[in-house]
Structures are given as structure tokens and as C-alpha cells.
Length: 189
Image (cartoon, rainbow, N blue to C red; front, top):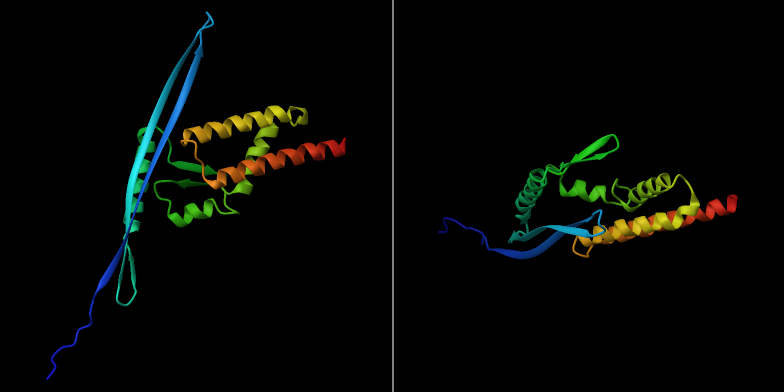
């Protein structure tokens, strides 16, 4: 006689490990009255190593253990920003996002094609700011582009000579908007 039948509860785990390092440098140069210069460089280095485990059982049900790790990383970054006196809230027109509570899905939505930090909306804000600073004067296009190049280079340097693809796409979109603005101005003249 059989009293009990039990299913085999074997499980497998997939483990993934990632390491990332980020160094931000800021150099300040002071020009003295005697013509000499003094430079000061400040740097901050961040490093992280994360592991993600995904376990599945015989019924192929997934159990993601990375979510807890994401929450810890988000809290660590928010705390680090606050310790440096930086705000963890980002204003987006009428609303704001708090980096302490943002979920991965929200972050992805913000950088999506139609998102507030997506290529189109970010490039438009940069473009409007640049032509506003230039007073709408298309003859200042080279100075405008030089300023944008310097800002992009500073951002790239701050992130260890690496930026995500969205940054390059945004840069290209800004330059295209500037070129179109000049071309349109020339055809109207």
C-alpha cells in the first residue's frame, strides 16, 4: 500500500555578477593677478559589485532575487547624493521624480522615446536653452556648438570617458536641430 506520493522539488539557480566603477573629476583653475595659474582637481570614485540570482524549480516558476539588490543600490545612491548635499528629487515641469523611490519601470519610461529624459524632449530642452542664450542670433552658431561640445566632453570625462548610447543620440539630435534652425533662418532671409 502507498501512503504518500511526493513530487521531486529540484531547483536550479542562475547566478550573474556585475562590476562597475565610476570616477568623477572636477578641475578648477584660478588665474592670479600676476598671471600665474593654480589648478585644483577633486575626484570622487564609486565602485559596485552586484550579484543577481534567478532560481527556478521543476514547474519552471521563476523567483527573482535581484529586486532586493536593486532596492539596496537605489537606497545607497540616494544616501550618497544626500551626504554630498545633492537633492534626490528631479523636477520635470509640473511633476518631480524622487530617486529614492523610483522603480526600474519608471526609470525606463523616463528615458523612453517619449519620456521626459528621452532623446527628443531632452534635445529640445538643450536646443531651446542654447538659442535662448544666443538671443536667437544664428550668427553665433559656432559659439553655440562649441559650448555644447564642451558640455558633452565634460560629461563624458566625468563618467570615465564613457556615456550611454542615449547621450550620443541626444547630442546628434541637438546638432541636427541647430543645423535646421540655421538653414530655416537662411531660407527666410
